[in-house]
Length: 79
Image (cartoon, rainbow, N blue to C red; front, side, top):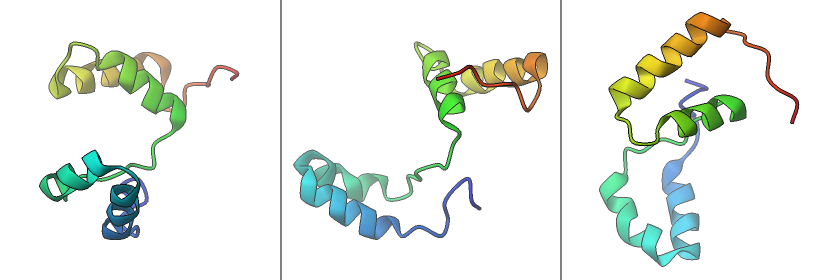
């Protein structure tokens, strides 16, 4: 549940974000089930890079192969 941030009130976040961005305010009702993940920043970066011209199934497969090759706790590069 921590990964999916189930304890966070997204209605409150959508309200604040919508007040700051008219486009988000317009589309927020259509994506009410969207979650903001508590994802490791490096994992997020790698997922973003892998997402270019791919679909979710292929991205998941690539990330699974990376975890298999590098291990679940792959060392992070220095930032």
